[in-house]
Image (cartoon, rainbow, N blue to C red):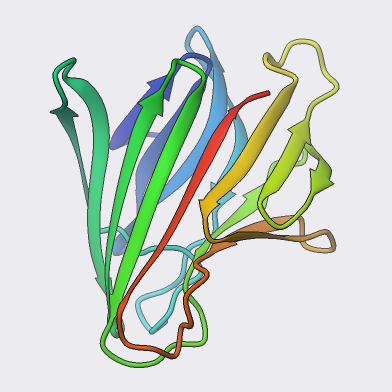
Length: 185
């Protein structure tokens, strides 16, 4: 994948690439120059009013705080929503995603949807936490944890997809927010 933007936190990395009118992303582990995908965003199309994942059209890297820590900031527009995302590295072992969508019309869906790589197994799945494991030794780390800090996680075993959704009612016109963290654990 030819990345247009990326952010690493220890052995974890998120990479964005151009896909039509938006930027798709993968979350994975890294070992030197090698990238091993764990989660791949499921994107929509230009005709989707409410796509499966936030339709980011621009991603930039900025430095924030006293330590000038790098973050990725993104914005996008699709259908009847204005989307934003902030991704930051935390403690060299996790990535934090803070996503929002301001809608001008009611929706049936808001969230971020991912396909789980065939190399990874969902070991545990509850409303706010999913554990992923890997049995091959060359992939370090062998266990990851996905945690919803605002909103809920939903795992669809038949499609091997994970969705992170806000707790707010998608039919209400307001700014909907969901946050999640993926880390070693």
